[in-house]
Image (tube, rainbow, N blue to C red; front, top):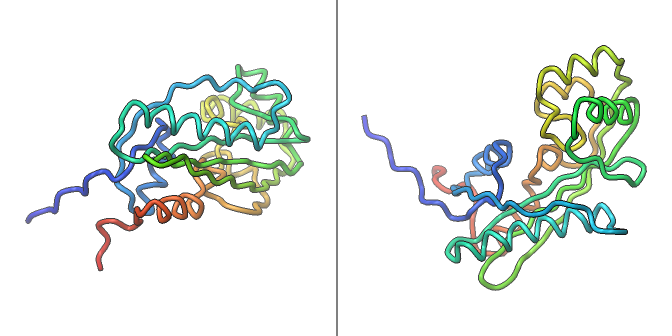
Length: 201
């Protein structure tokens, strides 16, 4: 029994996130991975939308300067409640405080995706809304102990254990995970890169 070789990468993903890799694989886009390693500090008076857009562009452009061959795709995601950004928790107390703030309320998830080519850096921004049920203190503590919230914007993962908190989602599930697939496909198509590579004709 023979197996066809995997398709060559058509883009570089400027992210070490396994979730973004899985989402790209889901739409049939072969890729390689290079970490961007950029300063993610919020600038003074920067809005959440401007923040994610700037970081996505910066990540894509930074990696593109290092490897001037493939187009570079980058994304940035943040959780916003009452106009305030809730990034990755700094520690247990911070993580529990974030979950407490999100409990019983609706928050925004902003995800920007950028594609850097030899011509320019193109950008799309998705805004989705997620509603949480009320979460008790004991349940928050048990969730923190799973280890899942530690490196997630807003301190939860919608595709993981955190799904039990979600009562409603308006927008894009993949964007809340970290990569809006419709917007990503738009950027790729405009750059002449197709999805479903290797799929049966």
